[in-house]
Length: 171
View 1 (cartoon, rainbow, N blue to C red):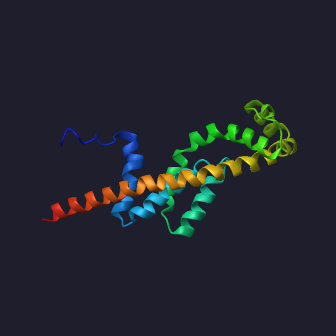
View 2: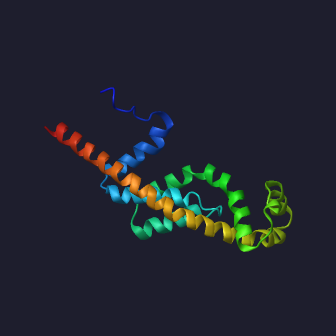
View 3: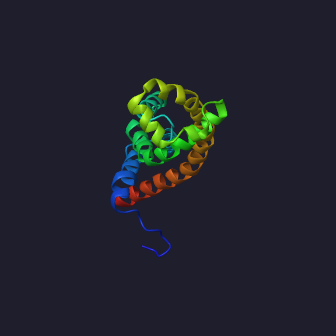
């Protein structure tokens, strides 16, 4: 191995992310479809509405004939980031659509309302949630396009390397 080559990912990340995605290439998923799968998975993994990631990702993957498992793997790996972005997106979404002020949407208030008064929680959050979804959509479109554009050449290069390796092993 040359010193210019970057080290391969190891451990958990290799077993749970890299290897399953590379297996998709080996099983005939084209680099374009795999790049789209990962890009959409990343976008759907950041939806500011808890509980819709799996349904949305599955529906779109089936509709576009992408690999459902790979898309959901990517989207669920982003769950920690989704949770970190949830309150800020709700605050900005509320400001965008004239809902409650940002200082009314705190973690303590969310926890209290969800455990004690569902109606008050719905009144507080419906505009904030719609605004958060609009903000997510505005961000998801360029993020998905950029990820697709970055990943497509990478997956094409990986596919070429795998084909070269298979050709060498066949000789």
